[in-house]
Length: 410
Image (cartoon, rainbow, N blue to C red; front, side):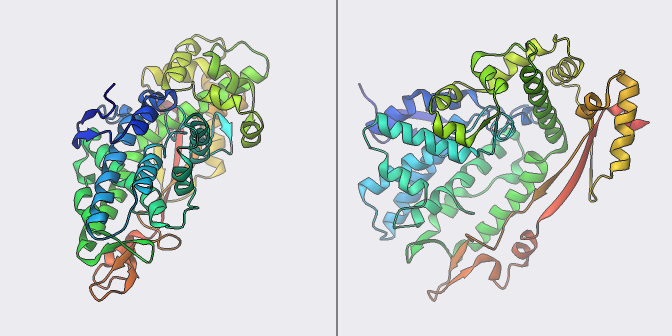
């Protein structure tokens, strides 16, 4: 069987599967599951074209990683075949642990478990199946390999992950202001003392990258309608879990039912790896299929929120620079109680507050390093003629209030 297939990607054109091992990993059920998890969760409620999946993103990131490694080799950076394959696998599997709707339900189905941790557990299981072939890929993923630039290519403030998702999300949403010159950035990458750097002539591409990232957060990832829809989805799962654990009958797919019945934590995952197999059965379809049942459930909160989300009749939402006061929310909860003839606890499901933050670049920690012509390496924020980057280092926080539109108008 020919395993060196060529895939046609709408963003980059042809993508090559470089070897048999990567082909077999892509064919595995863990990876194929990513076909059924949308990259941007429920953002297609705002941008109808945002239907691309984690599967698309993973393959695109692998393609860009291949370009980056070839470029670094061309500049004299020694990269063995084993290292090449390992970092390709690491970026291919970096999002393997995402649950339904990607980031939206990350802390709703289980407690205190980030998707990166689940990705690692899945990679470790794959490693057993492939007789240790992923040992080096896991070291790179965990940042335990002696050459740190490989991990920085997978996860940093200027990693291959971001280079793909910004370009891909811009393409599928149609928000072309968020498009970046990923090819040029890749050509400007280099390695100094084992650390990933950007050559000085690529500094304006970095500024554009950071500007595009900031814009995409406000215009796409943190768009107020998407935030509202995601919040409603979180509340639906919360209510379904609450009712299930009270002993009420809440129809759901078998895999989802287990996560509704139990409050699963990281410790549960580590002590019972069968939970991982159940988790690997979950995707967006479990949630939508269950919500279609829940729109007819006798519980007012569950059926009302489910029906609203299915029909895209969303709650109202407003953003503010200041935190929403308790007086405002208490008043809206009281109005919701009267409007729907429900208890204060039930009404609280329809009145939610929260905050979102946006920072394109955080100078502290793992920063973006610029290699100047004379050989010294400096933080990109220290570049004398780029005041915009310093401005983009500031974290901007906005507070939101979600409530029924009829009550907000009152």
